Image (cartoon, rainbow, N blue to C red; front, side, top):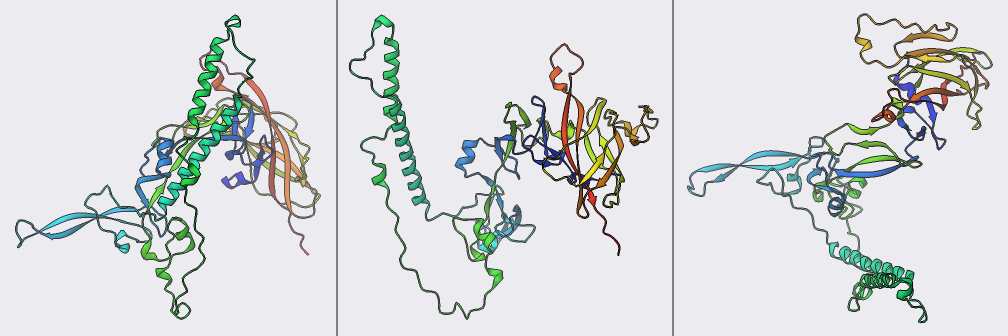
Length: 450
């Protein structure tokens, strides 16, 4: 029977002529076309932390540099740090002869065993954290640059807007005869608002910025750089340095915990009709989708029924399985396709009659007395039938001496848009015929035995 590895061997053609497995495609129920990740528009819904699942607005995430304020990553391996508790014995301030125990907290990595104590970070008295972050010595310079370019962009924007409203000539004026007094007043108000966008006279953005200084001399290398043995356990690798580009520590003793990066929940929208294809729930705790039009739930899936041995210019019998994901009986037709891309390396003979795929029933597999299905199948074209799965017999003749055996076909099938009947008087969803172009890699040609 077919396995999940067959998904990589059967590829459908999307609207941008890319060949991908059906599990990586979406079906637009308005355009009735397959869409891949490049055929859709990606929209950010909300950023969230993958550890604590706290979601926040995009503006707040931008202020936090797209990092969580309470979760940390290990600077050595990148795994999430866990908070550990320990007891610290201290002298009693009321009685010097007695001691008291106080619970202290530190962070440790359960994968590489790195702890905050390795870099001499003091333990905290609360489990929530309050861990002190490193201060970048160039933070003031970076903030000055950002403020400088912000004022510069504001000034350029004001100049562009001012050019759109050029003053009219002196002989052009508005009169009440034509009712243009209100237009003139609105125009004057617009010009006054644009003038407020410009930089004030006492704010010279360019002169406030201190020019950068060029480094002309470097400190000499130490004398023992070529004789002192290296301790790789105390040095950081390139990946560890680039994980913190502000500091880039060369010594393992200078690695500090890093705030965890935020992830985003995104929606996918069709570029042609601008309808949503995938929209998750707003709550990060929920794994359900409000809209999920993945093609695997709407398009019949084709898989390879079993292995076959191919010989050049010799006909071979191959079984393909068709799986119906819809809750309605679906009629499918398999037709030949003219391959313009030149990928096809074999000739395929398909059944001439249309086939009926039974509807999907999740509870049918648990029924002790299943209902027998009688579809009057032709034994020369149908190998088996099991619930909503049908085995189709095709004949393949390789046209090359060696290499992969690739065939192409066109699958026409019925599609019922069940969402189109929601809130209407129609009880039956409309039936539409759509077709898909499919490329199948059946295997490789057997080598000749000498």
